[in-house]
Image (cartoon, rainbow, N blue to C red; front, side, top):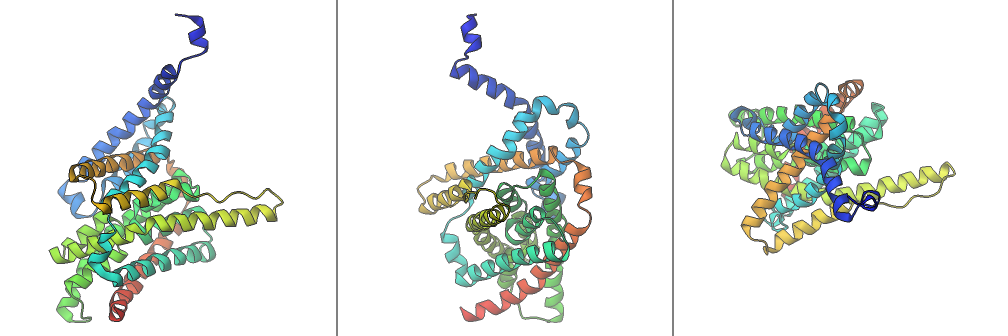
Length: 362
């Protein structure tokens, strides 16, 4: 072989070398994603609202703290690629699940309810987490996003904006698992008890709206809705999709707020002022939702895109689990759980009030 070629590799050789370095990590993340996707279809796990994303990070945590340290070196590049590039691409493709027409199916009341629940829950998380519990900003941002929008997917999407660590993500996802799973049991039980004792006049459709606007994950929303009936489940999913649609403006506003805060802190420390960073994947999410709303994509393409999106997000979650050290999660202590419990109580109480009060004005 020509020595000049070895010293100056061609673009194709560079690409092959790069692909080769990514392959071990991608295969490992992919294997965990496949196992988590399969397990999420098991009746017990499915009925309890445990999604593939949740199972992927749990599996990643187990492997990451046992076997992975021995194979971390060859897998590092592919795992980092999964946590960054695949995650952002997955958030963009998440827009294929939504259309702007979804808002029309539930009416303006649902949009207002979702917006108020999102905003109040996230602001409560920042105040209670940082002021009362003394938690760090990264963790409170992620726990707040997970509770107020769409669980693990919102935590993943917020992670690059908040510049959080893998252990921060793991802690936030753990709160989604604990309290989202509790919701799948508590919400239906409260509905049936209310039907028996007649405390509040609430229909199955209103219950579905309540579930969609307050329960953490989409899978948990489905489980809590179906426990009451098909009408409740359908309304819950549509309400939840409207709430998920608010992820993009939330990320944009959060990015602007954090950038301005960092600029103020930099100026006060005598440092150069930084630029406001807009997360491109949030704009891509809006664009993909808009394209899907136009109905120009064949249903087969949308279906394949959603399946690809599931795979990418699950691989990203697996990669986050693999790189999370359990001692770092343990060091977070009980404060994240106390914060998540506070938000859960708020979602139950204030969420129910908003769902009963707001529709009277529309």
